[in-house]
Picture 1 (tube, helix red, strand yellow):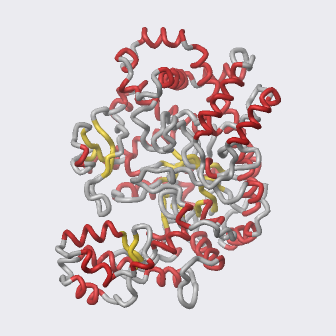
Picture 2 (cartoon, one colour):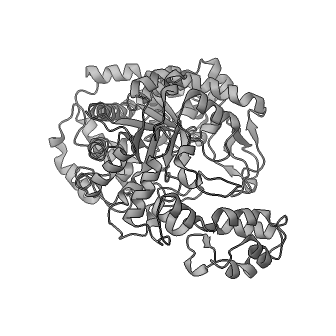
Picture 3 (cartoon, rainbow, N blue to C red):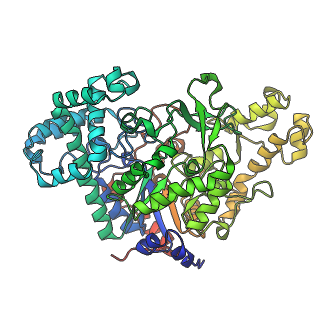
Length: 612
C-alpha cells in the first residue's frame, strides 16, 4: 500500500502536517489511570508517560493518544469534568514536584503507596483525596510558592482562567462539594464583593489550587519535551462539552444556554434519545467575545500535546438540545438541533474549527461516530483532518455486509479495532461478533407484534449468549427461515431482518477478511490477534491507533475474562467504568516478547518508525 498523502500539505491544516510529517503512523490509546510504574502511587502519574514513550520506541509506535486529563473533582468521569482547562492533581507525582524536597515527606509517600498499591485490576479513586492531603502538607512547607520566578510567570500567563478555577475549587470545598447551582445566591451569581471577601479570607486555599496546576504544568510539559526527544507525538483528548457543575460554567454563565441540556436524538438503540446534562454553548456570545475561551483552551493544551482528538466532532455542526424542565421520563426524545436550520450547520462548525486551528499548532483529529451529517465528512476531507474508522463498523452496510478492504478506508482517518467506548477486540470477537443486542431485538419484536419469549430459543443459542448479546443458532441460515420462525413478512419485520443480515455469519466474514483459513476460533489466538492488528495497520488510514488492551492481548495473560478489559460502557454507571488497569507494569512492558512482533507489524505496514 503506497498511499500518497501529499494533498494533506495543501489543506487548511498544511502547516501542522508539515510540522509533524504527512506520513503513516501507528500509535496506542490509553487513559493515564490505566498505566502504572513501580514509582506510581495508586494511579498512573505524569512521569509514567516517559516509560510509555520508551515502550513506544521499542514497538515502533509514534503516537500516544491519551483520554481526557481534566480535573473531574470526585466524580471520576473524564468527559464530564469540572474544568476544560485545569488538569487533575491525582496525576501528579509526589516525588517529582518542582521546587520541593521529596525527602521531607518520604514516610508519608511510602505509607500512601502501601495503602494504595498500583497495579490492581481497578483504580481505587480514594487515592485522590489522600494524595491531596499530602500535597497540601507539602505546599505548606514550600517557601517558593509566592516568590519563585517560574510560578509567578505561570500565574500571570494563565490568570484569565486560573483565578476563577482556583476560587471555584475553594468554594466547592467550603460548601461541602455542593454544585454551584446550590450555593448561596451571592456566590451562585458570582457577586464581585462576595467573591473578593471570600478570596481574601481563603488566600491559602486558593493559592494551593493554583500551585497544583503549576505543578501539573511542569510535569506534563516535561513529558512533552521527553516525547519530542524520542520522536513520539502526544495526542490529547478535548471533550466537546464541560460539566454543568464546572468552573467554566460558573465563571462564564453567559457562554452557556443554562435552560437546556445537551444530548442525542432517538435512534435504534436509544428509542427515547439521550440527555447528558451538560449545557450547550451559546456560540453567538462566544463569537461576540472573539472566541477568547476557545483560544485560551487551545493555547494551553499546546503546552502538553502535538495533536488533539475532538470528542463528539459532529456537535461542532449541530447539537441536540432538550429543555431542562422537560420531564425526565422523556429522556432526549423531545429536543431540537442547535442550530435548527441544516443549511447553517457546515458554516457553523467551520467557524469554530477555523478558530481552533488559528489558535495552536496542534493537529485536530475527530471522533465522528454515530449519526454523522454529510457536512462533517466534507469538512474532514477538505481540511485533511483524520476521522475515526472503527474496523468492526467499516462494512458494506445494506449490501453484502462484508468488511471493507483496507484501501476503502479514508486516507484522512484513524483506523481502530476498538475504542474506549467499545468492548476490546477479544471481547468483541468472543461475545459480540455474530450476535444481536437483546434489548434491541426484544424491542423490535414488540413493535412488529412478535412474542420475543416465544421465538428466542428457536432463533438463538442461549447457552452461548452472554452480556446482553444473543448468538444465532447456526441452523437459522436464511432470511426465509428467520421470517418463518417470526411468522412475519419481510416488510413487517424489516428491522429484525436487517439485524440478522448484519450479524449472522459475522465471525466467518471477519475471519476471511484478515486472511485466516479454516473454521473461526471461539477465542482469539495470538496468530489471529496479529492478523487483526495487522489488518488495521495495512489500511489507507494515515494513522492506526489501537487501545492498549488490544496490543497487550498479544501477550499471554488470560487470567481475566476479556469482557473485564472494557474501559467504559456508554449510558451506564458503575465502578467498572473508567477504572481499568493494565495487566502489566510499564517496567514489565519494556521486556515483553510481543514488543518485537508489534514492531514488525508497524514496519511491515510501512508506518513511520522514529529514528531519534
